[in-house]
Length: 77
Image: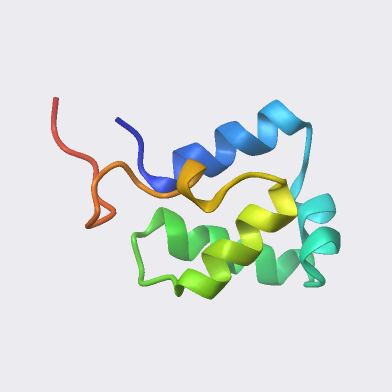
């Protein structure tokens, strides 16, 4: 079971996209994308619009990068 951050990392690796390329696709700076990914990693509230923009830039459906747990937290194994 993965949270959004791990799913985004996996998607980026699968597509061969780094933060600079992702930033260009999103129309943002690399620093802005880094802050967004840090917010995702720390389970901060990310608006559906921001998550949708990220998914669009990665060329995936937003459900592919949403956390498995609706609260965004991974469950202990």
